[in-house]
Amino acid sequence: MDFFASQESLTAVQWVLRAVTGFFFLVIIAKMMGQRSISQLRFLDFVMALLLGNIMAHPLSDEGLGLKGSMITMSTLVSLYLIGVFITLKFTFIKKMLDPSPIPLIENGKINYHNLKKARIPLDSLLSELRKQQTEEVHKVALALWEPGGEISIFLKSEHQPVTLKEFTASHKPFDLPIPIIEEGKINYGELHHLKKDESWLNNQLRLSYNASVHDVLLATIDKQDQIRIYLYK
Image (spheres, one colour):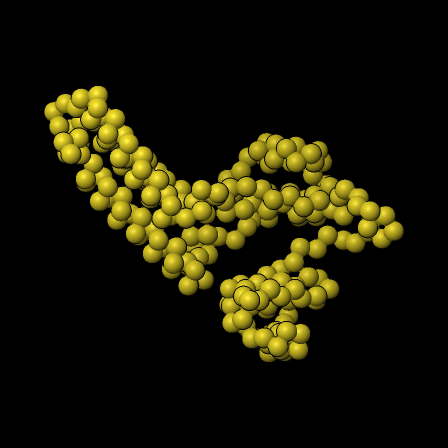
């Protein structure tokens, strides 16, 4: 285990053993952090990636540094990360602080320049994202959202969307993005107030349609026609 501690110099075999140990330790750390960190870097994930990369890189390139201190530091940071993820699942206000809501960049064919500056996105980058999704004109876009993960979601107006067999005989309907009013058993009172609805109305809808309470609902959305879609935990 000489390779594990700090040394004045390491042999080739000790360097290999140190690299193998570091690799498998990072694999375990990544597994503990979960699938979300791999598929999509959010704010907290980005901070962790920067810290862990720097901490592990030094002992793998400097024989004067041991692995023990770096591994203890990384384990502590991952524990704090997992606690942070758990807290964001339990407390909505902290979740919104670390994982903010999407920012609308284009609404009904018009660029929201204020939000563009808020998201710190150059206009050229927005146009580039439109081109990547085969959308050459801004006026064709019903809604473009800057997602917390750093991606832009683009929804075309109904008349510019690809036609399916079902739509050949159907008339065009205006674009309508369903709004979440319940997430993980918690009511989104801001959206409910914006829709001029109250909690008693929502509870009545749940009881009549699904014989369920708010705590039974994983996700509930509503569109402009007041049609509610409810997804229960079970």
